[in-house]
Image (tube, rainbow, N blue to C red; front, side):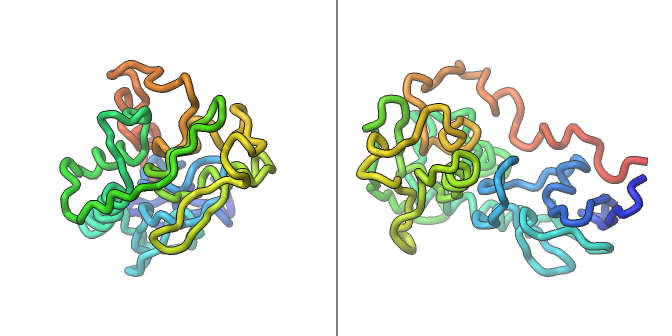
Length: 242
């Protein structure tokens, strides 16, 4: 047993965390999946997408940035929280142009996989905004389609903290905020196909595409065809290990 373990509860299940650990990472280790989009292993969490919203002692917070504390009661898999996440994911679908049947990321897209997990079969609750944003195919190996961007910032943090390049960054404000590059186009930046920022596991949707790798896995063998999102975490037994 770890002497400085912090014990708290998620949906009534006792979980043991470590000092400084976030609720999400403690939940992962306990086999309890908390949905997320802007958070990915290896990057500093920023709590921007709010898909990981939970209730902590009755107040909402982002599980990816909230540290564990002794005795707190976390609500994760309740009807209220599930409905909150459904609305956030629905809005992301309606805010961008996510044409799943013809998207190269279909089957490995985390937004699409979360839609299935949350039971969003027909995202018609909000009006479609159908934005017209830049598509940058200037680079010989990489394409950037900002129509599909959900502004999670994963490529920005990976380029800044892992590649030390700052190729990607936000431009614009409010509803016009989108990901841009530090040059006239991708071809005029120092981005490289081997950068962490353009690796398949960084962009959760089909915004950053590696050319000549589209549809490289056949239907039925794509990432979320084989294992629905979150099940890799849920394979771990829930709660405190005796």
